[in-house]
Image (cartoon, rainbow, N blue to C red; front, side, top):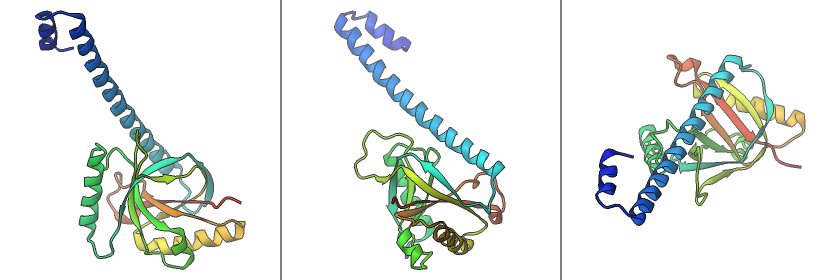
Length: 208
């Protein structure tokens, strides 16, 4: 509680004024706690990325369990420049009171249907994951369940070849993929050469 607030209250003491002052402080505190939780979740996510990088097997394709999450999506346009799409993402992030793409995991989405058709360039949206959200309206739901996870090192032109390996793996294992493939760069903040860029790929496995 600031000195001016204390002085204002002391000049006009009453139970009503104290109740109002405490209510305002509780609201401010709840907002601060919410922001700190968002920052904590972002830091935990970045720490997990760094741990993954240190122990990564780039050739490995594995199955993981994912919790439900909610994504904000921005449709992509084949005619739009990268700068325009990034600006759209930043503006969208501001709507959710996120510091420009620092507080959330973000990446791109491509329909699994396109992968099965051999179209590895048909990206439908950019996305970022909300650390916390009170309202789920208008958000893309990432369902909980089993996901295939793989990695691709190098520039983005290597992704089609990696997707072919993923589809071959899924076929040999006897399961189908569904929904969207979610791509995100996990080491973009710690590299100087784009050839060292690592894309993490996660795709939902269709339930039997």
